[in-house]
Image 1 (cartoon, rainbow, N blue to C red):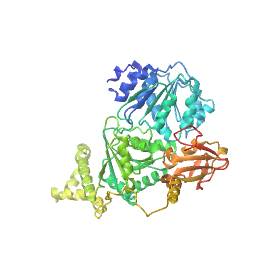
Image 2 (image 1 turned 120 degrees about the horizontal axis):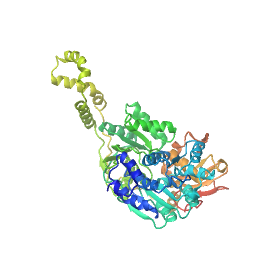
Image 3 (image 1 turned 60 degrees about the vertical axis):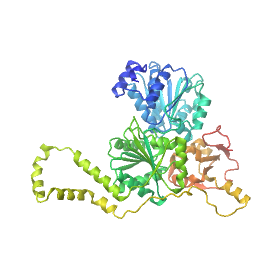
Image 4 (image 1 turned 30 degrees about the vertical axis):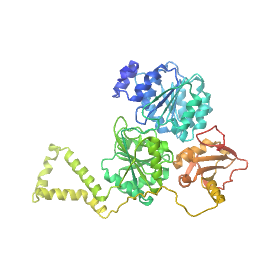
Length: 568
C-alpha cells in the first residue's frame, strides 16, 4: 500500500515523500490507519528493521495539536541511542509543521539543559524511563496532561530493569489516555504490561510473535573457548566485504575485542556505555560513513542503531536472554534486505542453539570455521573484483603511465599478474600457511549430563540449593538514594546480562546485597570493575548466602511480580 493511501495529511506526506518513502511496510500498513483514529490501545509486534518508528511516529504526529505547548504525547524507549534516533526521525517526519516541537530526554546528558528545552515548549517527549522519572519528580514534566503514550522496545526496557519506573510513570498518567505498545517480541513481561495498562487493545503482528525476520540466514560455528577470537578473525577474513556488528556481553569484553581487531589491522571500533555521548556519536558517524566496517558493541549500546546496509551480525558470545538473539539479529536484513546472523559457540552451548531454534521458529545451521585455503580464495576474488571495478581516470594518470610501461615491459601478462597478486596477497598466504582446524567435532552425547558417581539424597538437595546463584555485596544503599531497579540497571548495563539473571536484592543503608545466577557471576565480577556512579567508585565483593539478611529491605529486582515482592 502506498503512503498516500493511509490517510496521512498533505504536510506529513510531503515530509515522507521527501525521505524517499513510497510503499508502506507491513507493520506500517496495518498500524497507521488504526492509530490515526487514536481511540484504541494498540500492540504492534514486528521484527527490528521493519519500520516501527514510522508506524507509531506518523500517526502520533498527526494527532498532536501544535497550538498547545504542553506535552501531549510521550514515547518511552530503553536507551539514549534509540531515544535520539526516534527524535531525529520525528523531526524529519514533521519538517513541514514548524510549530510542532519534539524534545529528547535521557541519562548521560545534563538534566538542566533538558529542563530548559522542555520549558521552551514541547508537544512530544521522547524519553528513557529513568530520566523521565527524574524530571517528573522535579516537576519539570507533568504527566497528568498526556493523552498518548508509546512504549517502544518494551521487552528491552523490562530486560534493563525499568519495570519499577514504567509502573510509576504509567500510574501517574490519565486513565483515559491511549497506550501504544511496540516490540519485537511478546515476552511475558510485555504481556503483563499490556494486561495492567491497556484496555481491549488492537493487536497487530507481522510474522510470529518471537520470530526473527524471514530473510536472515542463521549460522553457528562451534569452537573451543580458547579459539573464540581466532575463529572471529577467520570469519572476518572469509568475508572481505563485510559491513557488520560484533556483539559482546560486557563493556570490558567489547573494548578488548575491538582493540585486538584494530591491532590486527581491521577497520573496527567499540561502542559501549563507557564512551561519552560525543565519542559514541563519533563512532557511529564513522560506521555510517563506512570509515569503519566492523562495530563491536554491547546489546545496550546497539539498541536503536538504525543502519540499513549491515550485512552480518556476529554473536561473539550469546546473550543469556533468549529474546536478545532476535534483537541482535534484527540489526541486519533491514528495509527488506537480506542478512546473515552468525553465532560463535563452545561445546557447552549447543543446547542454547536448540532453544533459540525452538523459541524463534528458525533453523541455525552448524557450519565449519573456514580454513586457510578458503579464506585466501575469497580474499583473492575480492581483490580481483576491486581491480576490475576500479574507475580509470585516463586524463589524470596519462603522464604517469610511460614509466610504468617501461618498468614492466620485460614481463609477460602472466608474470605481471603473478607479481601483482603476490604484492597484495602474500601476507594472507603466510598467515594461513600452517593454520590448523579450529572446529570442534560435536559428539552425540555432548549435551547429556555425565554421571560422577552415586551421591546421597541429602547431598543432591544441598547441591541443588547452592548451585543456582551467587551472592554479592555492593557499596551502595539507601543513603545513596538508589532503589533495587537502579542496582539492576547498573549490573545489566555494565555486565551485559539481562535482568532475569539478577535475583533477590537486599537494600541496606550504606551497602546492599544481590544474587545473580552462577552462570553470570564471572561477567558481574569483570563488568563491575572501574564502574563509577556520580563520581563514586562502585565496588562489589563476594558475600555469604545469608549476607544482607539483617535489617535490609528485601526487594525483587526483575521483570515479574510487583515492586518489592519476594522471589519464590
